[in-house]
Amino acid sequence: MTRRPRVLVTRPEPGASRTAAALAEAGLDPVVMPFTRTVGLPVPEDRIAAAGACDAVVVTSAKALTHAPAALRAALAGKPVLTVGDATAAAVPDDAGRVLSADGDALALADLVAGELPKGRSVLYLCGRVRTGTLEDALSEAGYAPVLIETYDVEKVSHMTDTLAKALDEAPPDAIMFHSGVSAGLFLEAVVDQDLNEVLEKIDFFVISERVARRLDAIPSRSVTASPEPRDDALVACVRRVLAGR
Image (tube, rainbow, N blue to C red):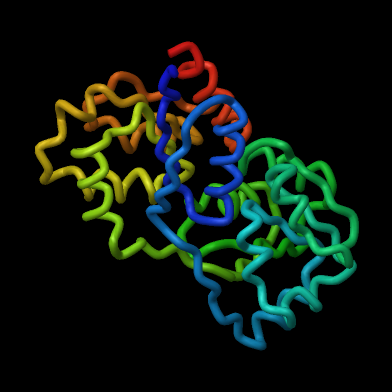
């Protein structure tokens, strides 16, 4: 029986299981090893009041919605919600107002806001503590007043370094996927002091964007492939295209 290419999935749950299912359907052998986990953050009452005064909501990750406390979600009922993509739009509560998807990246979402809202309006950005800053900068430059509320944080999985080093040494995968710069950075930290260059040179790396790809410049690798669009399905398609024939 032909061995199926093994792909290490590093994104946190619940997304890791969805990615693994898509890889398995494509005839690949996924290995789920989240490098991070997301945890909810408390939102002070004054921030919830500020949210209720905003004209619209923007979201770049479904996690920002799932970790939002009930009082914050209630304050946003009926407001229009603009999301970075369809997967995030699917996580918007049913009691929201009109839901629009940019089907792209943070800059595409900023363009969507500009096409839907008059300048000067207050836009609530539900976000994580770790982020690039691209969206809030683009909104400010476009003449909006972004109000940021952090609903979740990303934490390193404490046992990741030892587990990863052992996995790479004993049963190296054919490919590794990174859905964020955080995971790529943690990978670099985990392998920097290990004698793994010979192993890494035989691994294909697949990343969610060119920005994340740049985090891997120092890694010896057979190839680093960036998804043409910052979506999980597009990234999985890249993996399938490269590995399916092996």
